[in-house]
Length: 385
Ligand code: PLP
Image (cartoon, rainbow, N blue to C red):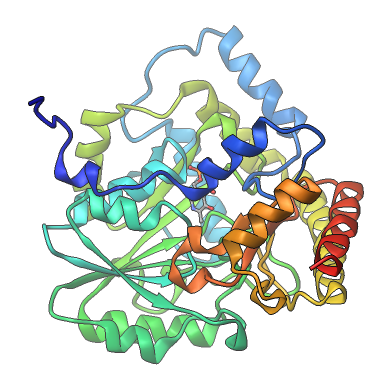
């Protein structure tokens, strides 16, 4: 009998439902996709030029493991300007997207059996990242009735002697919820009382609509407890450049940089150079994209509610999360039938944890005319049930 070479940890993982679903959608014609979790915009021109110029100037070598100093300085200045939180460049690691940042955080923190509290629905990678690092993901649901806000009493109840961290994401993928300052202060209190680290995934920080983004490490006493995950993929439409960062206390950086050094070495050099331009010169572009998302957000939320799919107003990121169980279908049947019968791709909420049951995720990082057509088809589909 052939030996099973794959580790137990890996055998315990399952392919992302999003991937499975989009592999099917990719084989079909005339699909409108509300499924993709990335900006439809091409990266702003000045960023592209900066990347190309870097290549032409021969910046094709490794950088320091921490990343290009000028980029780390720019990130520090940026975080201070926006949120009043003060980091030094040696407290920043430039990573291969927010994805690597999350991997570094989980791997550096967790012993086998350590628990990480994860409010759900959440980004599909959280539970696998924690499990790969030997940890145990502990899902704490949020609910539509409460606007998908963090359930602070439930988080506190989930704390055990094995809890090491809380992994929080605001603005949230997939619900679009943005945690209020009051809520984050309560989370800070829990972190302090139970001596926890907060991994704060803030990669959608600039995409908020009419509410403030609260930077967790800027809260009183929280900088020493926070691993701040930031990125360029969403705010600057740079998914393919693979650029993100971690901001954290020195002791944690010292551990995470070792993992980064021995697995990745450095984030892509030309992307790092382009990232400097993104931060220093592209505020107008960020604001223009944010405004466009905002108008699409209104279109999709009003449209879904008018169709009879209850949708709470998302205040951040670029996702709407309508309840579809009101149609009598579960989320996977709804998404599969909508794809087959009307050629509209959405993501079944179960992909984001058990709390996503009964919902689907619709991305509005899609052109307005496409959203209108998708709404029309969803309306026809719901009427046909
Ligand atoms: N965190 C969240 C909440 C996300 O939605 C994503 C991507 O969808 C990521 C992190 C990872 O993004 P990237 O690795 O492109 O920076």
